[in-house]
Amino acid sequence: FITRTGLVKPCRLLSPLPVVQISERPLVHQESLPKLPVPPLQQTCSRYLASLEPLISAEEMTHTRELMDEFLRPGGIGERLQKSLERRARKTENWLSDWWMQWSYLDSRMPVAMYTSPGVVLPKMHLQDRQGQMRWVTMCTDGSVCFNGRSLLWHSHTLPVEYLGGKPLCMDQYYQVLSSCRIPGPKRDTVVNYAVGKTPPTHITVVHNFQFFVLDVYNSDGSPLTVDQLYVQLEKIWNSSLQSNKEPVGILTSNHRNTWGKAYNNLIKDKTNKESVRAIQKSIFTVCLDAPKPRVSDEMYFNKVAAQMLHGGGSRWNSGNRWFDKTLQFIIGEDGSCGLTYEHAPAEGPPIVFLVDHVVDYMKRSEMVRTPMIPLAMPQKLRFNITPEIKKDIEKAKQNMNIMVNDLDVRVLNFTHYGRKFPRSHKMSPDAFIQMALQLAYYRMYQTCCPTYESASLRMFKLGRTEAIRSTTTESLQFTKAMDDPSKQVQKSEKAALLEEAIKVHRKHTHMAIHGQGIERHMLGLRMIAIEDLTSLPDIFMDTSFAVASHFNLYTSQVGSKTDCVMCLGPMVPDGYGICYNPMDDHINFAVTAFNSCEETNATRLSQFLEDSLLDMKTLLEQVSKTQ
Image (cartoon, rainbow, N blue to C red; front, side, top):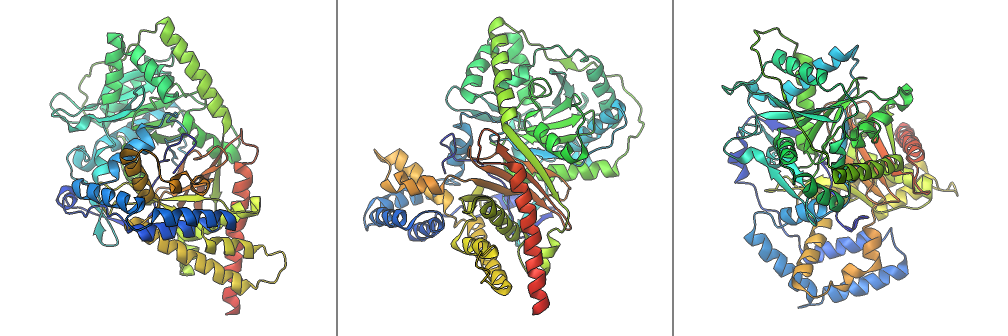
């Protein structure tokens, strides 16, 4: 569970079955959802030991087994912690959700940009001019706000219920995305959702050239602005913010959370500043109109755009054109680059993907329609009084962000040779197949395997967030070793059988994870109970093997979107990789990140090994199929 901040890293959606949307009122199903179970203690501990086998030495394993025997002694500490956890599960709606929010997000003191907030790159828009950008922004804004007959679908609780394997999923996260914001604190942050009050917000914020504006998206009678009205208001904002010499107040939100917490308190001492900050925090979402960046080759384009979505490119470019604490920020560049970034604490990927798919589909179907115009007031520009101390905080934030930007290497791989249809044609799970390709790529690069984290959804349960799948198994290691066996003794049919077995085990682990029987969160729960109830942590949690197995060099997430987009996220550990993938029918979009400051990691090289591994696995299956 340990990241470089000492905290659990958040994660995202994986579904082994297709998620189906059915138009029913979600709250009817919400109350009937089962509670997240506490897995049997013996089951979790046995599976934990099995997960260590490919990762640690026989000597280390012997020591860990001794510690586990002590932990599981009848009437001992393990049983006591399990009973306390089961008591908590009976008394709460979800024994994990509050801990998860605090432990993995709000207690973290690392910057949210690149460390916890993902970016999403949408297909490139071929915009001819600035008017093209403004039209795109208008349609994106209209599509985001005006769902289902121009009502705020989130706020009216009329979203279609999602089902997985015939079972309804928890929809709670969908109501946390709009009108919410993270608020920095000196030791722990909070998240506020302004949509739950009697008067939900009716405005978005727009930022251009580091200047923030309030744009009301509803008329005084409650009707939403027309597309034309939105366009005119956005034009007004653009034309009144052409100066590019303004202080980038938004870059303060990119800083280390303790540093930002102090700067935040200093910033809002001033009444004007406080009102401006509150307007941003309360807005439904933020739209970032980015300045164009230097042109790059087609080969490098998506790498640069993915980085832009994650961090804005540095203080010289668009990192100050953000409010990173805002849950949802759409980003549109003059050059046609577009996407979003989201602050991860309130929700996982599914609500974001749902919104992306809706907006892209909406924009395909909709056109700018001329409607009668009602004169509207100029959107309010948010003012900030910059004292010397605030100016100093901004300069520090600029320096820190530029260091982070220079340290992150981002590579987007559009694998075009095949997509999810190929593994399915061989009766294999596309997700498990891709995970084995990642195992093979890493093994080829380092001649060893590593702890691997894949996220899984717990939304079958009330207020469910995520579980982790440990993708590195004894079976996956046997497959990766066999693929490049130097003795040439392993037959192709045997390699294919090992691949099939590794995929089978991965599917089993996935099934257990989404049904609340995973290892990771149960171990977290036992550990949290120990922190609350005991004077010291049990030895099993202080064991070197525990730290090794929780140091996830591969931090991976499938993002299943209908849109041909790619999500990207930073690595979990300094010497690791962050890998997101979106499997489409005939191609797969990957984003791989690593830190330049680590000599051992290289996102470009791993991407190449990944492409080669996917091709070699296809060749293997095709050759074996021909001989059968």
